[in-house]
Length: 153
Picture (cartoon, rainbow, N blue to C red):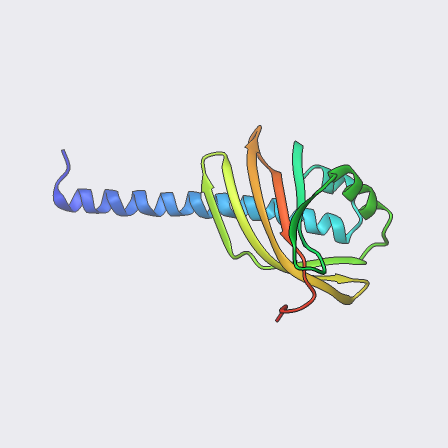
């Protein structure tokens, strides 16, 4: 069927195609997350809403004054309403894509961030996203974050 040289070229082409598909998938996952933060910055609540699945879960890891850790559930509708009451440019979350993993219709993304409110540093932390491809479009299904004011360099 294949000679050694043909197999070698076939394998190289298959590898390049696979790499290109993976890169495109990662770019489409990044695009949804970037769109969410652009929606925040531009106070575009419709853009924000379109980033989330219908059953999205929002959570924040909280450490109280005594150092006890808990997880606080947030309501995505309240988040979107909060954003809608701000002025354009007030909410600026600057992220770095640290890791993106995709398996079929599931993506997992980790993004350290720094958050600025009205141009002033507020806090930093990390976001952990779980996205699901629904109807051919990536949607944020789960978002949990950490928040702190120190160790943000």
